[in-house]
Image (cartoon, rainbow, N blue to C red; front, side, top):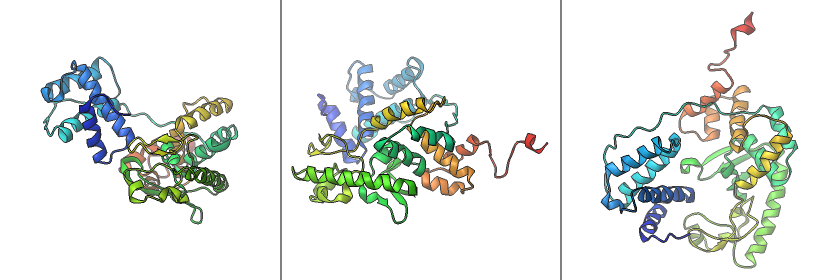
Length: 319
């Protein structure tokens, strides 16, 4: 959706020129707009380090926003000045709020099984993939038919977090449900092809491969129920399902399973990691499957299971 502001549209063009995701684009434009509104609609060229520092301090003190929210605002404004306006703000002298480390919520095998027993259809298949393959929910929803290798029981995650590709495992029990979804997706694609449209494509791939919309390999396994205009090109296409569809199906299942933990889609990714760690998988292998840059991110799961070092157990058990 185009902005009424020519300036914000020029920022949008710069973001797209650099190949950032739609979510990053929306986030950057939101915070840049809020920064301008906070300063009484002054043009960023008429502002500088002091205004930026004042806005970030206001977010931290008056709005009491989380550390990650402060980082989003800071990254957006730094992008505006450094990449769009070619202005170096220098050292802002601003410290982000300290963030207490929170251990992730995890589910044991029985709890996962109980939740899945109260789910049906594509939502059940998605949640099973989150736990069975350690996917983030949007990584799962963005899967295309060509990303699944049934012979080697593997999944290729493309353009994951930080624009990285990685390969992860596929559970044998997910094969049949996925094949059913793929058959259904191909039928949907054929119907779309009759009116000259197909799945949405990132960046300029639709121009590079003009007939790719007919290729089943490019079809989303979990296509949206409706056609829409592509946010970048305006072409009529079919995107993948929105993650809200999975969240809405998950919460009733958690209540029916009588589980009193704070469960969301990401909980199953955490549970995947802790399950592998408990079963003796090497932590670096788990790091690769999850796509973490830093091993310290993966090591949080050793704290979840209470084993900071291999073989460590409570001294009470030795009495």
